[in-house]
Length: 390
Image (cartoon, rainbow, N blue to C red):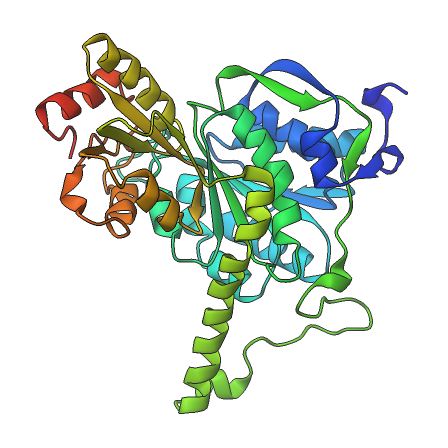
């Protein structure tokens, strides 16, 4: 049967392991936004809810096309980003598999929902196509919103390219829907650099979809016609100032943190190590995530031409943060450079907090507001020890 006319229910359900490791694949020359479409095509989504914001708009428009083709059970446009994330929470609370995406100012407008999702133990997967935060107005690439989201209880993956983005979306449902996990997960990708450029992506080329979500495995009751909406916060927790209310809230936050720790075994099932290390014996190590990894790789090539030996540490998982892996990877490094597409240097702070002798870290280079990162400035920082854009 032709793919274009195949409806959702006619696709064979398969495990995430089969989808990611065994299913036949075909290379396509597509944008990151189109990679989102192709992942959602196979993800067995029940409902997707959208609201447009650049550079995310195209991806959720394409997801809407999938609804028209029969790959999703329901799809609509919300009133704004806060409304979308609230509606996604309602759908997930009812026990269905959801999907959405946003970025930049949309992330901030919706922000209250993200720790609420985690506290409500909702297994939501969404994509953040990162961009700058106003003002002045910018729609250009910047990862500063990731720094804002670090302590929301959300699991966080950072894709270097469209292939990472495609695979991370598909694997994420298998992670968050585990009973012992059941917290939201954000797949982050650098806006425009990935979303609007074409790359070769190997996509699944079989008539298959992921096994559907089983709400009976949720650690908290789901809402249906026989189970009325339950209350996470009863009046004493909200209105009273006493030890019981404090302890109840604190213990629940501890459980959310424990769920993130329990996610590691399932993340490793699909990702292997949380970091990838190239040339680990080099005295100079570039540590990066997202598209800064690609720039770091080019900087290493340029350094090699000048007789300088440098390695690369690619961080794939931001939450839970791979502290032990980074300590091991950087144990013998003499100089550590952490290029970032944001002004705050949140990744440098994260790395500095978990390694000994963190004065080995060069503060930068950092570019922001939509600027590109020529590999020459990474080379300059390494050679001269001069922070760029800090």
